[in-house]
Each structure stands twice: as structure tokens, then as C-alpha cells.
Image (cartoon, rainbow, N blue to C red; front, side):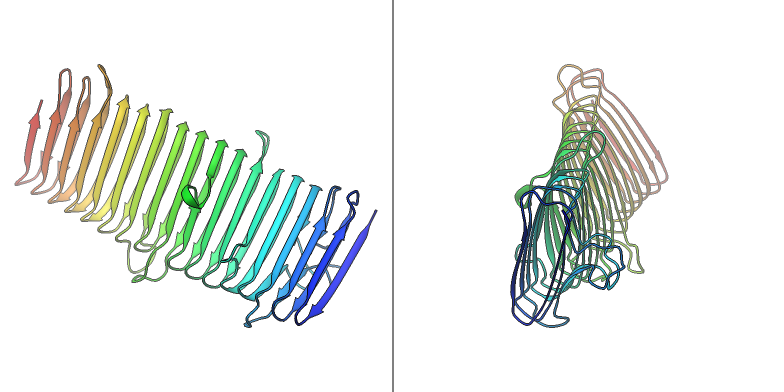
Length: 425
């Protein structure tokens, strides 16, 4: 059965479109202009249902609610069930599907197999009052592009499999935007790109459940292109097996808070200036717990940056790099056979590391490397069979090492003038 529904309205309008429970190949193309318009599209069981998708041969292959620079306040509600359902995908002809103006909202719900959502919002304050996409499907994608300020979007995905999962991609261009995501299943992917200042990505805690399950990937790029204003924020929570998070933040006053629990999880976080102002006042907070093989690679370039790392478990590893002045690195590891590698280049940098609670044989390892002037390294290891190496190049550097109980070893090397080393075993 083939159904094609076309609706055009101007001004204030409420439009409801539905197809039967056993329909297939249903299509809806809609255009509205003005304020306070509402569209509700319901396409239940069946397959190949489309909203705003076409092959470009017709002028009506799109979904639009637009009011340009006007007040907007339009509402879109889409419900699709079944397989191969799409919203706004590959729309050509007169352009992609979108909402424009201010204070527009979209609610889209899809279930089934190989579904797709592709939506643009243009203007300000779009999605800030509850726009969301919910997918409980497999091999499905969500793509959202928002251009403007004070925009927000919520995305929740479930499903996926070892052979291929669901994917989320959110792009926001402007200031004071936010994105919230939760993924629960197998082999799920989330990608965020934000350009502007004071933009936020929440993948976890009070803002959502983050990523739970197996084999998820998180990729975040945030560019704060204004030096003197609030930077970008990422909050991420991952639990389960083989989760990975990659974060790239450019600019100043950015922050990353990452929490991972489980087995074979990894974090790669980089904070850099990325512009003429350089990077400063950035922070990374990483917490990893689990049976083991969790790792964190943390990189900061610029001044007055802070890294705080906490690991609790077995066979955990932290690799940290800071290049600049007055940077601070704090690492706390509890458990057995954990390792920390840290490198600092510049002046006035500090490293503080504590390893504990490893039982009779800890076998924890620490390697410090500092190159510059006025740097300080402090290491405390409790329990037994720990190793610590501290290498400092430059002048007026300080190393302080404390190892409790027995069978511990330490190596301290200082090259320069006015350096001080204190070792307690």
C-alpha cells in the first residue's frame, strides 16, 4: 500500500496525520509558516514509512516549520513503528527538513529496524523546552544540526548488536547550547561537535544514563572560539565492557568530567588553545573503576590547567601530558598492578601521586618526567613491591618520595642547579 500525504499551512494551525496500523510505504511532506503551528504524524506498524524524505524529483520532498527570525514556537511530534522508517533523510528538491525561528520543539519516537532521523533547527531557544528523539531500534541513526544560540536537544537510544549498533550525531553552532544523550545496548556510537562558548554535552549523571552495555564509542569536539568567556563542558558516564571516549576541546576554561566503570574502558582527552589565545584554565577529571585494563590518556597544552585522575581496581593505567606553566596533576590509584606515567614541560608545574590499598603485594609503578624550572613532584606509595622513577631537568626543581613497608624501589634523577630530592622508605 502506498500513501502520500501533503500538507501546507500558514499562520496558526494544528495538523494531525496518521496511517493505518498495517500500512507500508507511507509518506508525509509538510510545510508550515508562521507562529504556534503544530504537526503530529503517526505511522504505526509496517515499514518504509517516511516523513520529509524524497528523491529530489518533487518540490514537496521535505518537512518544514519556519518563521525565519520570528517568534516561531512551533511543535512537531512524530511516531514511527516498524522497519526502514525515516524522518527528514536525504531530502533534496527544496532543501533539507528543518524548523526555523525561536522556541521550536520536536518530539520524535522510532522503533524497529534501520530507522533514521535527520533534523535541522535554525534560530535560538530551539529544543530548550524538551525537544527529544527516542529510538528503540537496531541499525538506526539520529542526526541533529542546530544553528543559533540557547538551543538544546535530548537523544535516547536503545538496541544495537555486536554486528552493528545505533549512532547519534549532534552538531551545534552558536553559544550557550547543550546536548544530552543516553545509550543503552551494544555497539552504540555518539558524536558531538560544538562551536561557540559555554556549550555543554551531558552523557550521564542527573542529565541522563550515559552509555551502558558493551562496545560503545563517544567522540566529542568542542571549540570555544571566544577567549574571555566561559568554555565548554563535557560530562560523560560509561559502564560495562570495552567503552571508549575521545574528547578534543579547544580554547579556554573548558572542562571534562569522565566516569568509567567496568572492563577494558578507555579515555583519550586533549585540551588545547587552538587559537591565538592559547589554552588556559582547562580541567580534566577522570574516574575509572573496575576489574582492570582501564586506561586514561590525558593531554593539556597551555597554562593553569588541572588534571585530576582517580583509578580503583586492577591493571589500570594513566598517561598524562602537560605543556605550559603553573599546571597541576593529581593522581590517586588504589588496587594492584596499576601504572602512572606523567610528563610536564614548562615552569612551576606540580605532580602529586598516591598509590594505596594494594594488599601484601601491590606492584604499582610510577614514572615522572619534568623539564623546566621550579617544578615539584610528590609521590606516596603504601603497601609493598612498588616502583617509582622521577626524572627532572632544569633548575630549582623538587622531588619528594615516600614509600611505606618493604620491598619498594625508587630512582630519582635531577639535572640542573638548585634541585632538591627527599626520599623516605
